[in-house]
Image (cartoon, rainbow, N blue to C red; front, top):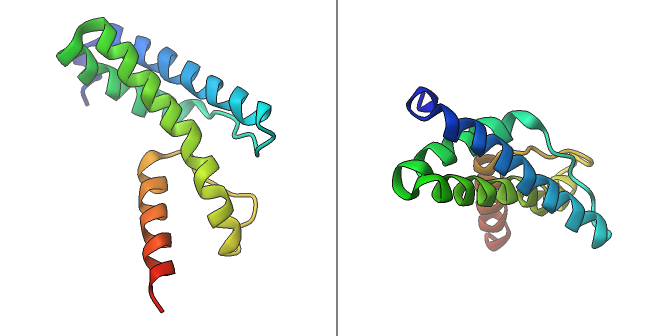
Length: 115
């Protein structure tokens, strides 16, 4: 784990990432889309990890920027894959993990290109 190397960046990353998720939640509500309610666990583990690496390369500004962008991706990802999950019979489900969303989108569009 990378958290012991920068404990302050870890907490800062969680907070910044969660704020990014709340911003996305607000935009989804304004746009009339399905609102993805932020779950704290991915925002902590993914956002805090992004902040530790951002802190190592860009200081506290890198920690905040990296984790905020990660929070936005965690919030947008499930909104992107939500209709795809519905089309494969998993209506109303989504997962707030960036790797699940990235892999799901790639597999879906590759499958669409096949005859």
